[in-house]
Length: 277
Image (cartoon, rainbow, N blue to C red; front, side, top):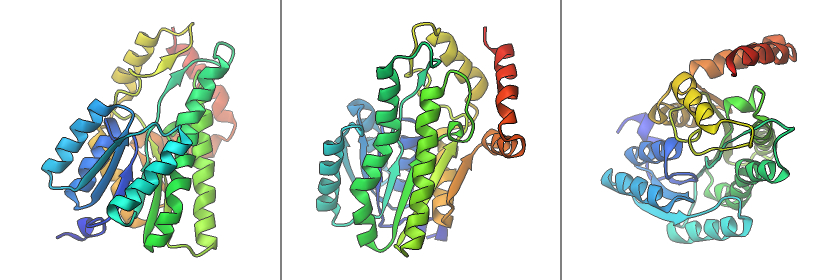
């Protein structure tokens, strides 16, 4: 057995949003490394397919339909996972949704829904499982932010807000675990353009052509496979990295923001003016 797989062998890994995309790829990746899996998604059909694939790889799997924005349900789910496996080592807070619309035309409910799932879902999962991860003596919290947790762009104010919040929450948590000498590592993940259904499943403000926006993302921005993203994440987790950037564009734009500071905002606005219809 390779050292890359040995790190995960026998570990109980919880993955939210496991019904498709990066979540499914993570589940298959970890299944192939000998992990035990607690998988959840709001999409029961997609989740069932992920379970089938992971069980075919020999993994022991517990699967549950779960809306991560429902705090009490997440807390009960955490207890059920602990009761089932006896221990929990890793939580991958991956579940998320997308929304496209500027501040002027976005409804309060639209913004709240993004925050409920993309930010509070991460908080709910982290809070529910953190005591169990500490108890395991070898825990790891992996929270999925986004490239848009590093750089803000027009029409993504709600999504930017949630993903920037995930970044701040996760980086603060990592320092708390270090200060408290707790046996829990913490990683914040920033994927770039990954080929998933997130854009096609997104919601949009009334003045946005959703089909055109989704097509633009799929054709111009989605450059990397979920499998590549999963491999990058698990490699970063194994090495104990605090931040994992996925894709050359994520690394490039992260550097761009560091160099230009707030100046990137004017440059981004000019670029968007030339790209958007």
